[in-house]
Amino acid sequence: MDPIIKSALHGFAPLSLEDLNAKAAMLERLDNKYIVPASLLQPALESFAALFDVLEIDGKRAFTYATTYYDDASLRGYYDHHQGRRKRCKVRVRDYVDAGFSYLEVKLKDKRSITIKKRLRLEKPETGLNDAAMDFVETCHTDMYTDPFAKSLKPVIGMEYERITLVAKEGGERMTIDTALRFAGADVACAVRPDMFIIETKSARGNGIADKILRAQHIHPTLRCSKYCIGMAATGQVRQKNRFLPALRKLDLLRSA
Image (cartoon, helix red, strand yellow):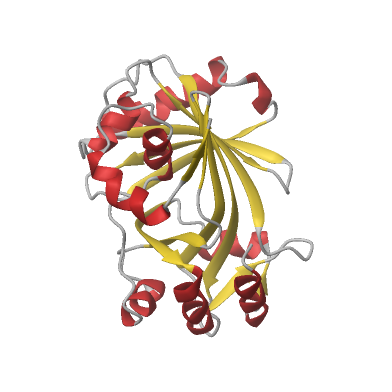
C-alpha cells in the first residue's frame, strides 16, 4: 500500500468487525464508485478521519480479499450489466484471506435500483459451487425476480486486492477503499497501478457523508466501475466493453500474459 495512505490511516479510531456489522452491515444500499489517485485520496482521508472509524482486526487495517466470479457460458451476468438491465445477478465466492473464511455472495438489483446482497457462509469453498450453493443462488434470484435463475455457472475470473473499510461514526453508512487490484482470467493477468484506488460509498440514498466530502474536493463518481466487468474487459473475455472504457483508462491497467 502507498506509505502516505497507510500513514493517513493512523488518524482514524479503530472499529471491530462486530461493531461494523451492528452499525452498518449495508446489505441493502445505493453505491457510488470513485477512481482516485493517491494524491487526491490523502486529503480526503484527512477529512474522513473526524467522521469515520476504520475496521481494525488484530492490529491490521488493510485486508486481502480474493474473489472468484461465476457466470454462464454466454456471460449473461456480464452482458446484463453492460446493457444496463435492472434484473441482473452477479455470483461470486469471496475469500476473506486474513480472517480465514469464505462466503458465497449473490448481488441483485431491486425496483429502486438498490443493490441487494445475499450471503451464504461456505465451509469448503475449494469445492466450488455445489448443489447447496446453486440452490441458494436459485432462491435469491426467484425471491427477487420471481423468474428462476436456471443457469449453469462456471468460474470466469479471479481477482485480489487490499481493502480498507471505513464506517460513519453515526452509523448507517460505510465505504471501502481498494488498492493493489489484480485480475486473472483466460490466461491473462492484469494489475492496476499501485497509486490508484477504487472508493465505494454505501449509503441508504446514495448521497452520504463520504459522497459530500468527495464532491467538495472535486472528486466525482466514475460511472460503470464494476470490478467484475472491468476485469472481464481487461482480460479480453468479452466483445462489448465500451461502457467500461472510461474506468479502464483511469485505472491504467498493466497487462501481462
